[in-house]
Every structure is written in structure tokens, then in C-alpha cells.
Length: 502
Image 1 (cartoon, rainbow, N blue to C red):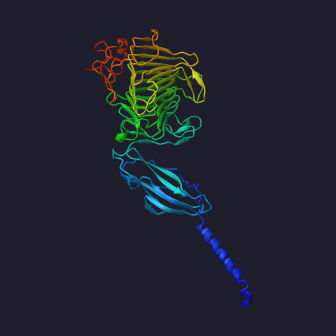
Image 2 (cartoon, helix red, strand yellow; image 1 turned 90 degrees about the vertical axis):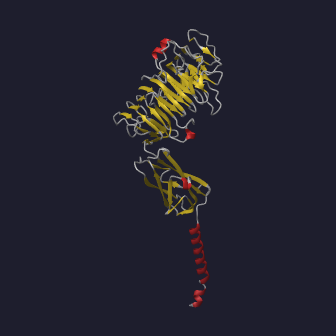
């Protein structure tokens, strides 16, 4: 019996050894590919509660291992470390950095995230951001963290479309017929000066919606955010001299005060009765873009008009005012210091400017484009070139800057542009001798006009050539300057948005 068993001992030993060997391999088998990619229950964690008291909110995400082998996360790190407003707990352990976190095959772990904010701390940013970084086999991934830092009206995207910016709507959820739902009745919404308005992504004013923004309202846009007034929507901005409506970025630190390109744009399509009075639009990519919806080809059956008065558009990284196939009436409009054009007008439309100032001494980077540019065509989003004859009327105004040519045009395919420019300061190398289009111009003035261009102070100096050079008939139509001074009291209105006051 014993002898009979002895012959099986080598086989038994071999079998047990193989079993132990393979068992150890299964226990130690990790996915080691350098393309390791974790799966997250969400790529972003947003704390979208508008805080009303000092408090803490906790959320979580799950981190999935999609592989048949175990996976080892070499490092999980809260980017802001101990200075972050966020705190994290990884698989039951609190901290800011964690190493060698294992997840079983086809399994997951939880990460809990907490944030504490004081909503009444006016020095805190509107949007608090951080991220958790995961490094697995040398491959880095991250989950963004976003929370709101002080009391405000917050708008966050609810619609995500590859061909459009992320957006939310005044009316509610979207559907396929347009940016927002046509199953919800149109709304008439008024924003009042109780709390700031913080826009994360875009807010859409849909067809037949009306958005009225009252005096003193501050609208803050997150990076790449903006306001979209869709076809048939209406925007009414009702600021006052003492309480203008301000559109700017949501970073409040001093270094962001004059930083261009912090948010995207105000985009207005055709069909509404849009009016902007006493507004400041600053530090955008494009301040104001007004155009027929570029996803359509002619004919355009809806009216396209904007009245803009007593407004300053400044410090845009690209263009201050971009208009295509639109009608604009502008009085006391100043656009200054943009990375490309202060104003670019394209294709058909009637563009009226009275007592306006376009001045460009942009210093962030070199500029080769003029402050004021007119072209008789535009290529829309469908790739169609649409030509027209823009009509540009300008009176008692100033176009100035640090280039030799700050007023330029581009005429395509033997088209034309109609001008009526009178009593205006221009810097240009164009031939502007046609008295049917250009009258009483002050060309290429070499002397200072403004008080302090370095400080963006474009009021007139004592001996400015712009003094007393305006048409009284135009001055009477726009009687008060941007500061509220009567420009007709001496019967000799000055050029631009400001009347000289000794």
C-alpha cells in the first residue's frame, strides 16, 4: 500500500507546485499596460448648490477598473493639496495624496469629495476649481472639481452638443428643434441688482424670450462662457450713467482686472428688438457679435437690429464689435484696445455711428489689423460666401490708434461699400478724397488727442484737435456725452464720446 502510494508522490508534488505557482500568479497579476485608463462615474464633480450659510457638502465618484486583471493606481493627488478648498477621502482614507491604490479586476472604489465655503466672503472667487489627478502606469487622468464660492445667481450648462458651446436656457431643457425647448412657453425674465449673475457655459435667450437686465447688475462669465440671444430672442440692457450693467469674467483677483480673453462673447442673432444702454463689456474674446444666424443661407426674413448707446467695450483679446448682415444704431459708443479689430463690419447692413470713439493701443501683443474694418462679404458656417453692400454712416467720431492705418476696407468681387463719414478723425492710408462719401475729415493727426492712453483715459485734453469740430445737428441728436455733460451748450460739439470740460 505504502509502495503503491509512493509512485504518486512525485505527481502529487508537481500538481501542488503548479497549483501554488498559478495561484500566486493570479494573486499578483496586475494590468501593466502604459495605456491604462480608469473609468470614472463622472469626469467632473460640480457642487451646484447656491450656498446660503457657511457649510459643507459631500459628493462622491466611483473609479472603475475595466480590466480582467487587478490594477494599481500609482498616485491619486488633489492638485491644490492642503491649500485646496476641497478635501478628498480615497477608499476610506483622508488626505491629499495617496500611493499604490489597488482595485480588483472589474471592481471599483469610491472617492468622497467635500468642500466648505463661506458664501458671504466677498473676497472668495465665484467659481472654486481644482482637480484630482490619477497616475496609472505613467498615464495621467483627471476629474475636475467645481464649486460656487459666494452668493450669486448661478447658471450651469444642462445641454452638451459637440457643435455648440455647453449651455443652459432661460426656459428649461432643450430639444432638437432649437437651442431650447419649444414645448415651454416663452419667458420674460428680468435680472435685478440683488446678487451677481455667474454664467458657467452659455445662457441662451431663445426665440420669443425676453431678457431684461436692470441697472447696476454685474454679470460674470466663466472661461469660454457667454450669452446667446437666439433668433427672435430679445436682450434689453438698461444701465444708467451711475449704475451701468457690467459684463466681465468671474475672476476677481487684481491680476485679472485688465486681462483680455477671460470669457467668450455676447452673441445676438436676428429677429429681436435688442437694446443696450449704459453697459461695460470688458475682457472678452469677442465683446459683442451681432449677426444673422450663420447656420442658415439667404434669404433672411427676420429683422436684424441693435441699438447701443452710452456703452464701453474694452480690452477684448480678439474683436470688440463683430457685425454681419445687421443694422446697428450706435451713439456714445467707445470701443478700445482689442487684440485685432475694435469693430469689424461684414456684408450687408446699415451701420450708424454718432459721437463714437474707436481707439486701439493694445499692448498685450503685436497687432496688424486696423481699429475699424469694413468688408462687403462674409463666409457663414455652411461655407457660403454672402456678399452685400454695407452702408456705413459715421458722424462726429474718432478712429485712432498706434498703427498707420486704423481705418481700412476690403472689397471683394468688384462689390461696393457705401460711406457717409463726416466730421471725424481718421488714421488711414486709403484715398478718402471722394466728397460724396467723406467730408470734413481730420486725417492722420500726429498730435495727442486724449488725456492718458496708458491709463485708457480717452477724455479730451485741453488742446485736442477734436474740440469744437462736430456737426451741431448731430450733437443735438446725441445731446449728452458719456459722462452726462451737455455737448451743445457752446453750440460746438466735440468729436467722440466725451465733451471737453475745463
